[in-house]
Amino acid sequence: MKETGQQRSPACYQFELELEAYLEGEKGAFVPAHIRECAYCNVILGDLEALRSASRAMPLEEPSAAVWSNIRAQLVTSGAFAERVSFWNWFEELNFLHRLVPATAFACLLLLGCLVTVPRTHLQQDTASGPSGPPGKTAVRSMAFIGDIAALERVVRELEEAFRAREASLAPDLKATYENGLSSLDVSIRECSDSLQREPGNSLAHEYLLAAYSQKAQVLSSALELGEGR
Amino acid sequence: MPDQCELTTTKRGMAPCGVGLVLYVTMLSGALLAADNKRSEKTFEAAPNPRITLSNMIGQVLVRGWDKSQVHIVYSVVSPHVEVDTEVIPPTQPADKIHLATHLLDPLVSGKDQTADYDLDVPMGTDLEIWNPQGSIRIEKLQADDASVESVGGAILVSDFTGHLFLRSVGGNIEVIRPAGRVEAYSITGSLHFVSPTTSKLRGTTTSGRILFEGDFADGGDYSLSEYSGDMEILCPPSASFELNAKTVRGKLENEMPMTIRHRSATPVSSANSFFGTHLTGKATVNLTSFSGTIRIRQR
Image 1 (cartoon, rainbow over the protein chains, first blue to last red):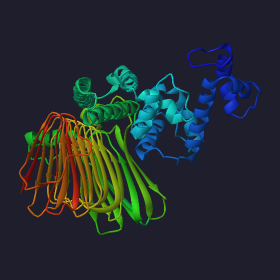
Image 2: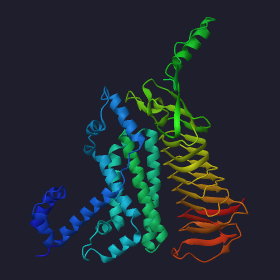
Image 3: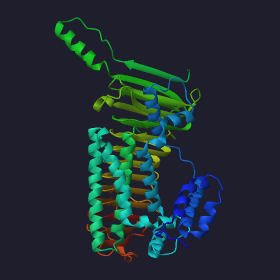
Image 4: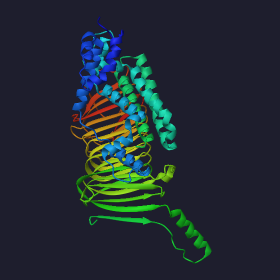
């Protein structure tokens, strides 16, 4: 039976369980067999492989010196710098993956960055094909769903929830500045959304709305980074 | 180290003059008040085109370019629980990189006690990366490949900078005077002010701040200014040659320059108010957008 995204079978859940090992090189028989049967899972695998190869081709970005400097300062303060430690020891001490907020913020920004940098024509073509259209072959196509403003809003909302949970750790002046900025962006998001409801074809309002979401994500990410001790 | 010198001046234990009890008490109080104010001065030999990163929390940062091949750093901290970490790379050679970072020795230190002020003289060609969330940043007379300057609430002022400028402040105003090189300036609630740029690529965005551009446009230059609800004003000389594309969704457009209207934008913006025309031969490209603010183009 051909499976679709709406009808997940137990085999699809088995596929999800084995996917990570498969991507790490364990060439079991189940995943290749399942993707021949299931178009939906086939697209998921294709997308993940496309993302992986695209990310391999990307240059390694060094975090800003400010990040390292403050991490180092924190380590010095906590006495962890009594002797010089290697980069990898540092990395283990950072326990970065356990710091969910910056990781989530980074993931959201990456997603948002992809969205705002993907040419609109790609997204429009894919959105036009609709959720009932044939599954696409590329990661970009599978991301078309976030062309929906609601999805963008969700990404920003998640960042905002993380910010609200941590805003108490910010200095009052900083918090006030961030609040002012966020409030200003909220006004622009609300007004642009209203404009688009009245005139869905208003391209300038659409550009402003996307820009406001992107700026809000940047502001929230900056605040979260600062809260973590940039 | 022969090529690096360090002078640390800590104002402690000022001796009483002994001319009277009042004077003694006054001086003693002054000494006690100044006891925590630590000023340090360092000089490093720099390699050509060094890179300086500076990460601060609160305080003023001033960077000036000079003709020497040395980096001269003066900083002062208010509290003894605040320290400036200086890392020079390589440590024994002329520096390719210098990292300066303010950090707290006591996490309970808060507010103005976190203040550190920096005053740097740097060689021409020095690239900068400055992060000062709650303080102002000022850069004067410097040529470099690029400078990245960020604050949250602090103002940013850059004058006579040649090179790529990336400036961002959430709430602070940004002022750029006589830049020569690509300029990117972004704020949310702060205003942007550009004065006499000779740059050929300039981009400025603010959400609720104002934008004021005073100057001419370079031949072949590309200028893009966008604000959401603040007003935007362009003041240019009668000799400015530019092609203008101005659009606003709900705001107003006021143009006082004699323009030749070429044609309407290829992608009309529904009810938006837009203007597309040229002044003189239209050598530069100027894109101005606003959502609900007023865009004014005036002759100086």
